[in-house]
Length: 260
Image (cartoon, rainbow, N blue to C red; front, side, top):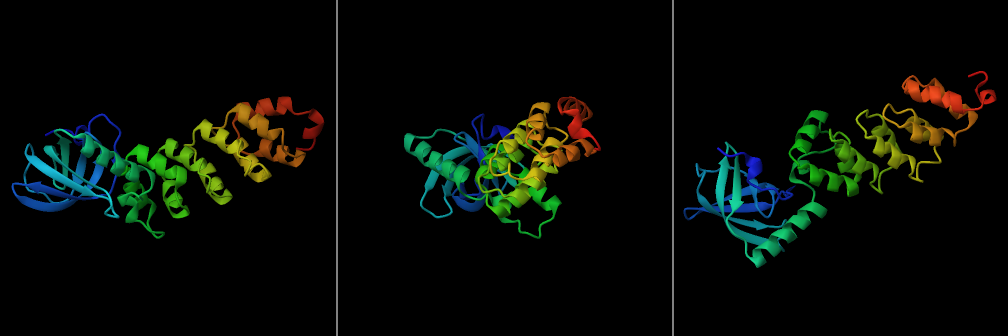
């Protein structure tokens, strides 16, 4: 039995959540794409035992304006999934597939998130996120709506969290929620520290400066913009990296620290 990840080849794939039909031995069945690329894909549904067989896959976008059909070989089968590899794609088929992939990557909400709502538990959210390939989660996070951002903030990938930090629609309350996560990359803290939207908030600057993964360069730059009261608050924070605290104390004029 082949690894399902091999079915989509080495090219980047995305969770498309597209309606699909699979034809085998003259019979047609409905299913849904999971991973999809120009090399092949992973399908979810109920299937007969057809590993190694030739099949025909038909796809359509959710709006019905894009369609794709091609022959493929089943390279993997489990209880509810099939891995397929396309035998050969014509120029027209390649063009149609690229359009479907572009649609899936750029605008359509992944199928796994469609099952979530505001009452979903963190366990349910994380399980749904794990079904979505990392490149798609990162791309989604960059432009996600507030509802989807509330799901993506639970993502275990720091790359997704950084993409959220770069989302132009993110609000200050969500930034504070991000800053409670110890898995943030130092580059994410750098991104937040240079975003003009947040630099009017002394509390937010203090929170960034005292994050356990902040670099001295970022912390030092932010502390220099704080009031004396703010500086004292930074140094008192229990989560402040001891090395950063020592360096900050050394760089701040002694008279400003009297009484802290």
